[in-house]
Image 1 (cartoon, one colour):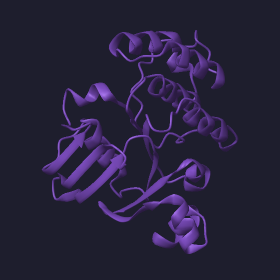
Image 2: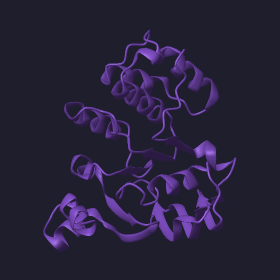
Image 3: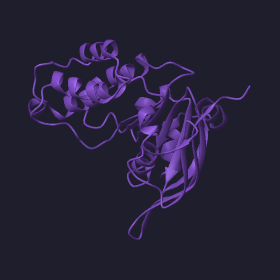
Image 4: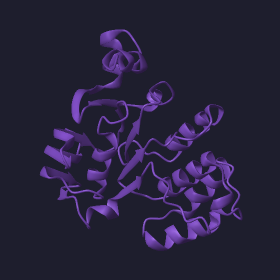
Length: 234
């Protein structure tokens, strides 16, 4: 029995002026896997995630989540963490959590409480007093506290010091349910995240260069995904 397709794109194009950020991308992603979306800066990773999240609309082609064209309805099934900082400086950590919980019906307080403790977040601290790394942790806690079908994470390790990254990666998989949740993680920190990837998509200049099972890639080429990354983008 084939896996249920959660995400489907067909010939998707997105332009910004004369720049074509996404160039005819077609892909199918089943429910219940972790996908690494890798590539250097400017390869189209963030734009593709925004298209899946419904933040941007394609100039051509179709984007479908859970069998529906991306729009207001699909946003209820998608938890998106952008790379940009969207947090309100005047809020405390607890107020950020409360504010988000009021906005989304699938909020899980038990999961939020676990993440706050695991990520060493102080509930009474104002966002303006958090370091860049702690703000990144808070964004991750907010994103992962939902019971969404699809989690879109854009460079979740950005700004986080190397010793803390393993803790962040563990938080990613702590609430992940294989067969239920799909995670698409955009990153160029491949060496630290490739262990959780089941599938890897290499983007370059808005196009897919490689799309394959992570373990099969390692077996076929006899090297890590990081090694392949360095070779593809050398």
